[in-house]
Image (cartoon, rainbow, N blue to C red; front, side, top):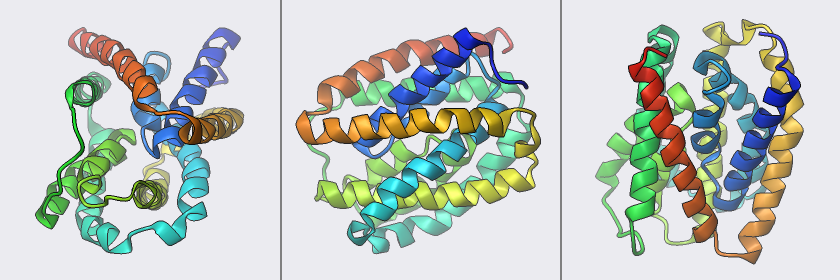
Length: 249
C-alpha cells in the first residue's frame, strides 16, 4: 500500500489526533477510538500493526514518565494470562478473514461504548481472581486490535483507588504489551507490508500532538463529557463495522 491520497490521509491524521487526545486524557483508549474509524479506510491487518508503532512512542511517554507510580504487583498478576491471550489474538489476526475481524471489532466497540455510556457510580473493589479473565480477554484483544486497555482498566480501576497509580500502571501495561506485540508482529511478517512504516512515521507527530492536548485537558477539565461524546461516535462507527461484516467486508 502506497501513501494515501490527501483527503484520506487528512482523515487518518485527524483520527489519530482525536484518538491520542483520548489516550492523553484517560491513559488508554487510543486504539479503541482510532481503529473503528481507520477500518473504513485501511485493512485491519495493516492498521493494527501501524497503530502499534504509535503506541510505542506515546505509551513510553506516559508509562516511563510515571514509572514510580506503577503498581508492579498488579501487573504481575495479569502478566501470564495477558501473554497467553496475546498468542491467541495474533494467531486470529493472521488467519481470520477480514469480515470476521470487522464483526469482532464492531461487537467489542459497541459493547464497550454502550457499557461506558450506561455505567454510573464509582467502581467497586474486586477480587484478584478476576486477573485471569481480565488478562486473557485483554491480551487477546490487545493482539487482535490493540484494544485491551479498557478490559485492563475495568479490572485495575477496582483494584487501585489512586487515579495517578491507575494511569501509570495502565501506561506500563500498554508499553510492555506493545513491545511483545512488536516481536509477534515482526515475526508474523506484518511489517513487510508496503507503506506501513512510512505512514506510521507521518502520523507520529499527530499522535504526540494528541497526547499533549489530552494531557493538558486532563489537568483542566473533567473528562466525562468528552469521553461520552467519543463513545457516541464509537456506537455509530461500531454499528457501521458490523454492517460491513454482514455484507462480507
